[in-house]
Image 1 (tube, helix red, strand yellow):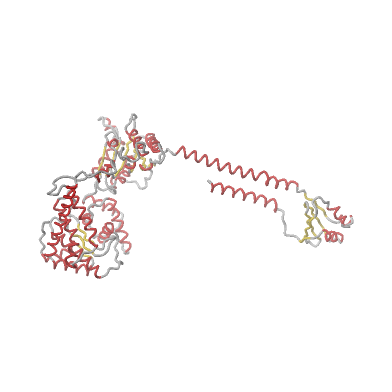
Image 2 (cartoon, helix red, strand yellow):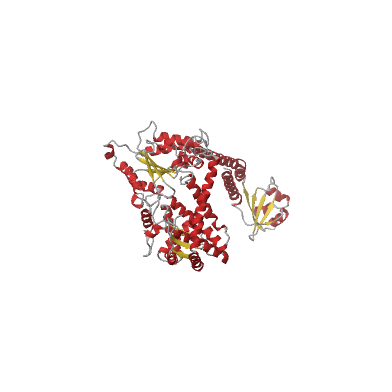
Amino acid sequence: MVKQLGKSLIVLTAVFLVLVSVLSFSESREKPEPISLNNLAQKIVAGEISEVVVDYNVLEVLSRDAKTFVASKEADADFVSLMRNYGVPAEALQAVDLEVKDNTTKELVIGAITTIILPLLLLAGLMFMLTRRAVGNANQAFSFGRANIHLFTNFKDRITFKDVAGAKEAKQELEEVVDFLKNPKKFLDLGAKIPRGVLLMGPPGSGKTLLARAVAGEAGVPFFHISASEFVEMFVGVGASRTRDAFQTAKKASPSILFIDEIDAVGRERGAGLGGGHDEREQTLNQILVEMDGFDRDTNVIVLAATNRPDILDSALLRPGRFDRRIVLDLPDISEREEILRLHAKEKPVGPDIDFRKIAVRTPGFSGADLANVMNEAAILAARNNKKTIDQQNVYDSIEKVLLGPERRSKIVSDKEKRVTAFHEAGHALVSVGVKNSDPVHKVSIVSRGRAGGYTLKLPTEDQRLKTKEQFLADLAVLLAGFVAEKQVFGDVSTGASSDLKTASEISRKLVTRFGMSDKLGPIVFGDTEELIFLGREISAEKNYSEKVAALIDDEVKEFVLRAKKAAEKILKTNTKALTKIAEALLKEETIEQEAFYRLVKPFNLKPISV
């Protein structure tokens, strides 16, 4: 506001100065030569003056040879009387053209501007700015409780269900909702009621928002969208007011769809001890509950919501009548990943060597967003290398870049560190082959990526929803293999195994406390602190077991780790030559792909053992 007033004052002052300048200098001429009254009288007597202009107390004199002079007189003195006093005869004065200017009007105008009009203009400008500011604040106050709801209008980039790969069951559920809006009669004839709410649940990047955009492109009815965080404000009652406004807007355009993204921002379970009973977020949730299924049920608005944390949502929000349908979106399986990769490769020039099935095998656990990023990074890598098409190696490199980060070949590594890294990664790779139930090795490298000095890429041959105890033990043996290889070859260990040891310790503790895979402690889950914090019901919770049991848990965790360590030691001591050969190949080539790796270990006839 201060800046706006400052700008207005500057503008008004500039206008005033321009007006004064125009009035004061519109008749200005070149600066004439000053002359005294005595000299002027002498020139008039000599007949050298042709014209005199009396402008208040200023005399503008023009000689017969076209020279100009200026003289000054007293304000009240009469020019003719003044010249007579200087001895100028009447005949000489009569030979001069005399002109007297009346400046009364000009002086009045300038005086009025200076004393009356300018202050009034400044005051009027100030009042205008204050009034405008007040009106703006009033409008803002009235619109403060309105929801910033958006109507989907981006039909240029319209997405349909055909543009969404995978998620067949989810698309089928949403297609029925769209069909209900387009052809309600066939459902109403059978007594079916329109679903009030559809909740999309799944991990980040699984396609929740993408499916919502597909619904917007398919529905053929007004589609409104808003983020749940836009409802919440620091002022009490604003969130509830915005919720009412959003639903009222959707009701006016019914039948319509209202999409609320990241609904967990306001839908967290009530009574969690965060903010008390008058928490603004809880008041917003209460209003959403009423709008979705309160006394007013005569509405054709379907609420579509998305969240990646369904377990923290309030139970009242999830009951039938509010969110009648809960659609779970899982991470894509190998076939769906292949389909997604083909979809993202449609508008990209891919080479003839591209095998999307092999790429899908290398990307277990990748979401749809991850796969889109993989293909985009592959295109960037191909462009960086001045290629016209994307080849298979570009995609493989992009997978590793997404997983671990970009290559750091410029990083200076001493020969000793490089040798330690080579044997460390060779240990991981060799134990992966020498232990049962381990995933196959796809690549071994000692080139730094991200924060890793080297890496061994081992991936399952098929998607796994369940994992057995033997598979966990095999993973533990592979994790500890780098540590064991350093100890066996160099007689010392380095910090390079710190991440492996941390992961191995976490897996071992989960085997004992969460998965019930300890023979001594049995099929019991110990500790619930983590789950209670995650559910949002408690800030902290005490462990549900005694100190004696805690000691047993620690012993069992240690037992799992040592058991895996012994298995890794057995494999590496029995196959020392194979370990050395793999390490030397890494030192020479830096990177070994799957086929080359299995050619290296094939002559040693490794027989996998159980942990």
